[in-house]
Length: 227
Image 1: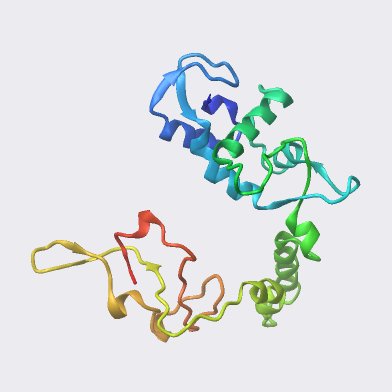
Image 2: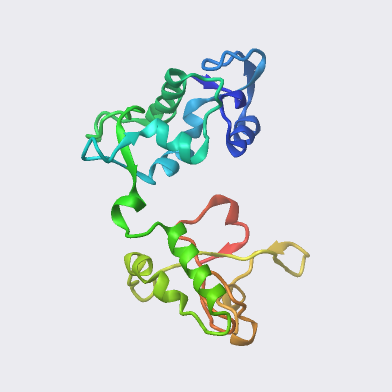
């Protein structure tokens, strides 16, 4: 089935639909006529990423409709669609790559879910950040060890790698060869910065050398990354 930008309230999704659309016609969901259309399966990856933030509730008292949750948190779908249309669109997108052999049931947009953070952590990441900012404002002259605020999250993401494991890093820019052809950075040029050039980042202070790498290699970075 095909959806259009008018089905969504979220600006990023509206732009995504228009950028990926290759045909024009009438929308199967909001019934807009003569608009750029996108097959719902083209949005499956984005919605699987979104739904990874939620987990099906084990009790009736704790859960909310999955559709209600993502609408309340993200305002995904346009209000021009009624709830049945929104549920149909959500299910059509997420179930587009459903495989009956993997043992998982098809998504039900009305099933009861809850946010993972509210189930697994004492505080949400937003709460933790707000607490840290409050500490900094209240004690501007006192160094605040940020790692204490994210120790639990860092511990859960800690992973030991074997020597020789290949990592991928992206760096903006390029160098030129003798023929003035662009070459991606490699060797020492793609590694961590020297101490005197290590600026403060997401998980390090000024002068502390940290090498940031992605967990997966994205196609759009391949021109600028070297293993």
